Image 1 (spheres, rainbow, N blue to C red):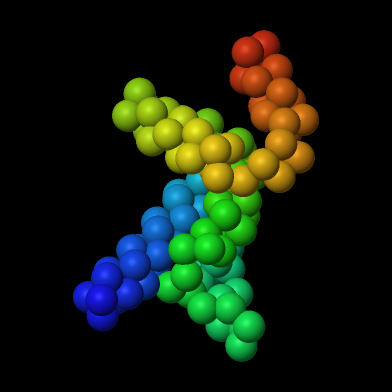
Image 2: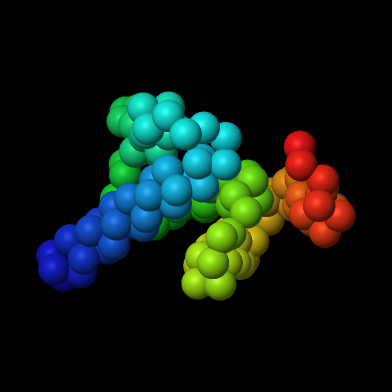
Length: 120
C-alpha cells in the first residue's frame, strides 16, 4: 500500500511538472524573455506551497489544468507534432475541468484571427 501512495504522489508531481513545462513553452507566445516565462511556469509549482494543499494530490489536478487552459489557447503551433501535443493537452484540460468553458471566447477569437491571418 505504501508503494501505491508513493506512486500516486510521484505521478501527481510529474503531471504538475508537465503543466509547468507546457506553460513555459506556450508562454513564448507572449514573451521571449526566459525569466518572465519561468515566472509564468513557476506558478503551478509554487502555488501548492500553501499549507492547505499538497502538490502530490490527484484530487487537485483540475486546478492546474485550468491554469494551463489559456496558455494552450494563446500558443500557435509551429509544427504538426506540436499541434498534436497542444491539442491532446487541450482535450485533457477540457475533459477534466468544466470551468475551462470560460475560455471558449478566447478559443473562438484565436480561431478567427488565425483563420483570417490577423495578427493581434
